[in-house]
Length: 261
Image 1 (cartoon, rainbow, N blue to C red):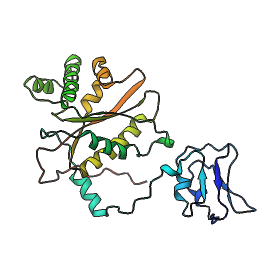
Image 2 (cartoon, rainbow, N blue to C red):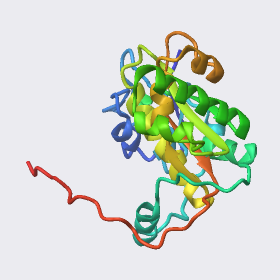
Image 3 (cartoon, helix red, strand yellow):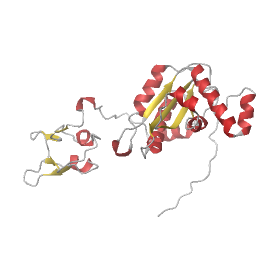
């Protein structure tokens, strides 16, 4: 099966498609100057060859050109983006207002476009907009913490009626991959970060659900509630909701520990 097709009338023979291919599937024919696929191309269907061609001259059998979006031009400036990153807080107190399922779907639409190793796209999602179901997750997480002796102080707070696992959040999104996929933790973290930052622009607060993530790797009842099967690893999750409080200051952090090499 032919991988790439080139419209010779449109092609400028500029080699852009060759330059952006991460795995060397494209070379330039010396005689005609046109792009051509290399022998046995190991295409990862990243779509860069199609997306980068300014002339629309190249198509790829592994990439649905009709599904490509136009490259956004209304990008935030450096100051605006830095402000968003600095203003982001781990929110652990939420209003009772629910998070609509449609909003979670919008966030997931952004998060699914996060980069993955070699465009493998092995990240799968668990989403919940049911506050009662999220509280059930918290209950199972607290039960696991008690059973394994983890964070006794937090278990004590749970016994006093304080949700230390999901913080009373009305929504949850988690990311999992096949257990044997070596880049699962990295890919999931990148995708969840995409989702968290988009959530912030929508006014949502988020906090990484580390205790729940740990419990979901060992607690059978919680795995069943989340729909996780054997061979599937939850790498991270976010509790989500409308913040109950605003922050006046950005807390200090340690100076960057950098080794310039």
